[in-house]
Length: 242
Length: 251
Image (cartoon, rainbow over the protein chains, first blue to last red):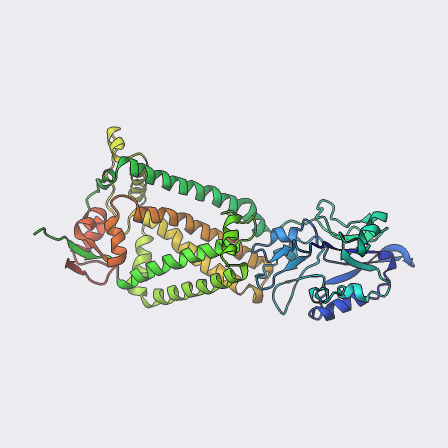
């Protein structure tokens, strides 16, 4: 099974935004929206500036998956890519609110969550994702981390490597930044939206406890009825109408 | 020849149909709804249920389609029935289940619960009263289930509609998220009550005639006199408000 990751040398990025435009074209992203980005940080590449390409981190422990009620968002065990099953997505936006990287948006045409999926159409043709293929400086590299031919493992092992995480939330992102990158303080700590949080913390456990107690109680009463005999309960007394 | 008991009409054909239509839809909606919660933190039954449905060929997308379609059909049929039978069925039903006599109803629930759990003989041996207060068309237990069932169903329809049109929902995502959580809560509330209802209606001793009336529409007059004396009084006096007219027959 391949384990697709992206390795980014942000020092090579020249902020041309070709990757953003190519992604929008390939994936028919609605006007005004984008699945990837280039952030501007402090650095020495340009005078006082450093450009940092990015997209969905395809985390190994994605909070967006934990927040999705229907399983429409999932990390595909076949390739490690975090995907959205748009036919199952009900557009509740829980995943959008819980992504520390702001990598998701609500597609205004489909009404469902939208994000980078590493261009499955191109990959099926044996090609690289659009953002990787068009990058003029090869700042973005993509491939199977477990495939020595991809060379990505060697790049990472050469180090140093930065994995961008929120201060208190390490979702094990699968994008590796080579060397120093900037900015690094933009991923945000997130919690599930209040209704989904309450559902998971209180409603579901309470339903388990109350439902289980009621089932056990009913089973106990039925068992008692079986042992005591059906006759007893039928001799119940009733008051007279007044 | 043994004299056959007089029978009193308790449920109209329409009410019987709606009861079983409701039961069928409810079970199917509960099964598919639980199958749609493909998230171990939110799933109350356990992921085995989701995996079982998937193994049976009911994947998430199909479950969503079945759940949404069936929910819409259920709500639509119920809305039409409730409106068409507003005066003859809906309003009398709501008035009946919404009328509580706190002291009498509480006594009924406590004594019935103790009778079922401790046993009538033991209660009598301890000198505790087992006589149940006189009940109307519905007993206190049925009313106690009916109120959350009605409110829960209303909540399910309202939040279900928001979820159904969530992709085109013009409001904020938080409204859809609250709708989903409340939808779950309403379903849980009614499902838990349903367990007790099914036991009380099918297995609990002495309820056979009432259960059979959900098929035939009739209960023996003697049964009504003992189980629902307040209603039986109204029927006997020709003041039955639940059904338009007294429909008494011998079988």
